[in-house]
Length: 325
Image (cartoon, rainbow, N blue to C red):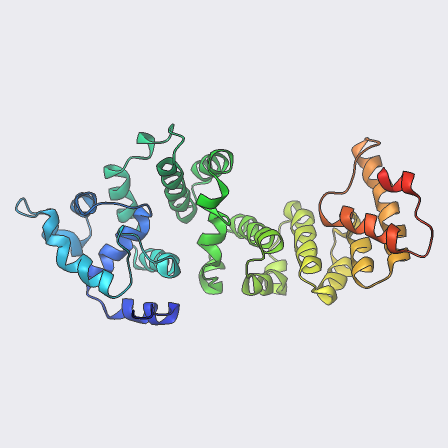
């Protein structure tokens, strides 16, 4: 059996295919979900792009696609369900955006495969259709549609169908700093939060995105209203990944560091200072409960785990009553 080409090899292959094959590949990347030759032909007919002109004639049929699709499959660019290989899906969409053809492709896809036709069906096909629309909304910066699809996916779709997270797939497979930096800052912030969360809880690779988020140039673009949450998430990501020097720097320099409740204790715990960690976390927990006006408010995720372990591992005999609280 032939070995499948690497990501770089596939990208090099895309540069050598014909304009019609490239346009079909971009169309399949926008469609996203499995489709038939007939559906693809109808989408090509509905699209105004020049490479599809031959398919718009009355004599054209789905069989006219056979040669192109066979070649694309032979090159390992698409699979038997006429879906783009995952490793080239995002580069292909970004190529369409750069060429100015994305809008025409999305319009044709929506005309032939309307979003509303499955929007109320709780099924795998509905999940794929919602992910397709979310992707189109993201690249079009349609916040209203994006939020609608994002909420629906997280409520109705099993993790296995959208794992690790649609936004991570869009922005981090692969992470392209030049493309990413051109997104509106609000979309960058949200996307980085998704990428960092996926790295923390699903152990996905985010090193390029993390390096970008730590850059001074990006930090200077952060609006004040978003800085506290973003810097908290960034610091937590650094702590979760063992980037202790960066976490220490953020804890010392971030304008929002007074709101980083639990993180100084988590850092002390990771550095082996269990007594200091317990003291810091106890102080921050009191402040958290004061701000929340709830006597039973508690740390979420890693600081809570670190607090319990710091008490158990510290030099003082653990107070089990306080530990349970």
